[in-house]
Length: 544
Image (cartoon, rainbow, N blue to C red; front, top):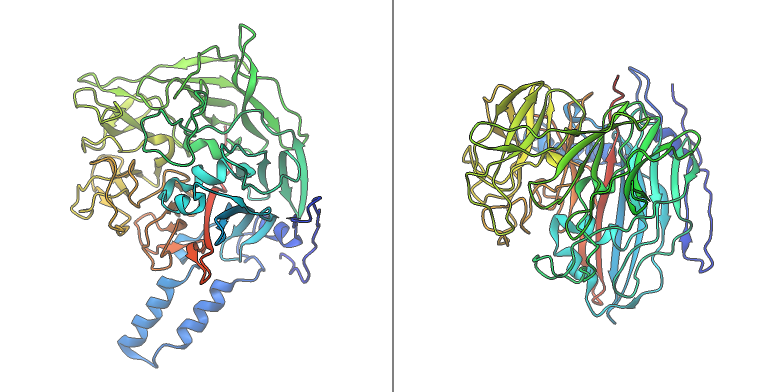
């Protein structure tokens, strides 16, 4: 049995300004411990207490009582029995603008295990507000599900996260933020990559040298206060905020600067040992030229415990290439793109879960591209040498498998804004599933539209209307629970902003896991914008 924690053990490290608070608690160790089979974690659960209190207010019996109790359960942030979660780590960022137009940003890293209350692992308070002529906080709230990238990565200090496969620890990176305007970011206590487990934080090594990438002002995207004219900055990919972690939990893959075969400095792949903190030798020596829209090395993932896959080439076209390399630096080779009849080319992407079979996105050149030159994509099941096309939506935003498609329990899950079963008339970004034999297509989320117009007609997953976010869509291969984030309001508990949700694979028992405030305005005109992201989830230990 796990012990109760009667008193938090805290370590504080005050900064020179006195505004930094670093909190590590013994309860973190409890939350990051692996529960024994048949045993429940001993922890405080506000959601359980609130659920009990809500049900006590229900009438004495009959249909009214049943409906009242069901409504209490729907409003609860406790996960449903069939949609339980294990270890979730996430960053909460709060941007505040005072009545004088001065802004500041604070952040904290939290860990939630099951229905235990989230525990703050580290909190960095906001600095003294600075003049903000761009209205950063208000603009951030209008960016919808792109908010994680626009603020938490550019202006925040938490850059990467990972949860160990057994749930026993969380890895995170602290790094000086990049910000093209006067900094509103919190002060950085120290740069580096850290691991926290059993209530103790340990530095593993230095932070990466890479910049955090986003599109420049000449990218063709609608202008925002967060853009830069620098040609070497890109919009980060969905993988850019999580550390790829070895399925056995021993190492993480880092994308950092290193020499290519010609001696030039390029983005390369390294390994970091989570026990010793030793950074292993450089695994790649990519000479691919980089430029706007092409970081050279991106979407790095463990294909198994001994093999790493990655992509190289432009991120915003269908011409990039996939490669693989062994964790000892050997076996480097290109993964040939698979072609289908009619000239369709399978985009070289990898299944997030590492399971087989897996699903990938297919670019269909026979259809006209969208305004950015992107071809329509369809979802294809890859099972060894066997391919099966699962969708025929004719839309550019179906998938892609980089972030938003996986196979779990005999069904393929993917993100799309199509309306194939007549349950998505607003054509906003939803999650769908289909049998791996191509039958029984279902829409498993029914996120309500907020009524926004889409900046890219016919591509709701790329537009600015609410929908399923492109970060962190995943399935728990042990419990079957599906996790995703969205800035819609499906449970009535998210009036303004983005939240993280969990549900059963069939879409039932939807629960909102986070309770950040979104955008609120005080009586004196002070604006607060508080949202979660990035986040990382415990993945199962796999063989190989």
